[in-house]
Length: 371
Ligand code: GDP
Image (cartoon, rainbow, N blue to C red):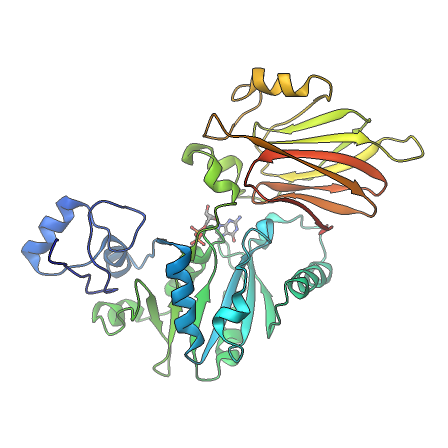
């Protein structure tokens, strides 16, 4: 290993210590492979033998380098975003990285999580508004559920049209469902396994997986970029199920009086400070993973209540017991979503004053209401 052994699939330097990083292979498997002279990292092994890709994580610097490479080639960029964690899944500065001449097709994933009642044209308008705010111009927006794709062929056809003889780079942050999407694409293509096993498509850079297209070009899967402010990084693997929803999210509406508090498990808190001017209750609607318990209590004493019941009545709690909860304060002038990046959001009516709490480092902000 010291001298450097390289994976014949992706070219990454082999290592036996970091499961999440490129070139990983358990030591026992490495020994077996050395005897058989087919040296593949675990990720490429799975790709080759099971047609299944596994995510690998890269640092921001590696990722910037990778995107920079993309900017020097002519390519169609497929930018995968998570509709449930839209801002958490955006890649800041993407257009600059990928070069001004490379068109961007947005694939907005996990549409299955949103209420069925949400009209497609309304959702599209909302997405376009968000992209515009971020200064991203696209050649199209495709809505998809990579986990249960019904329109995969349409999306692939669209990609094929738009790439016009170019390579395709698929980019996204971790947890947007990029691996799920790529796996579906691999599944839907015939003969891919054969081409990959001949290793005609080794990654040119660290750990890219290239799926051959008809004209000798490739669809290239780039590693997911890690965004530290995603909620997924704050909970244990076991508790991820409360953070990453699997099924349509059920809206939960609360009629709140001033000085009432909602706890979202032990992960976040919402306080209504003052309600509408006419003295009516404030109707707030929460969109979180359906199994995440929402607990309503009095604002007075809520901090002590949290300390006392954290991890029990208020579960799950952040995995780091010493985590500091940061406080945010907003006056709401029009219908808005309060977003706890990657955990969920609360739709708020105009004319109220609120506070929000979440682990320091998690993004908490307002956006135009989605639903
Ligand atoms: P990656 O890090 O971008 O490669 O993301 P993964 O493909 O590993 O997916 C992250 C999580 O999102 C997993 O728990 C997936 O099961 C889930 N996921 C992926 N696509 C979808 C989808 O279309 N709908 C839903 N509900 N979940 C999805």
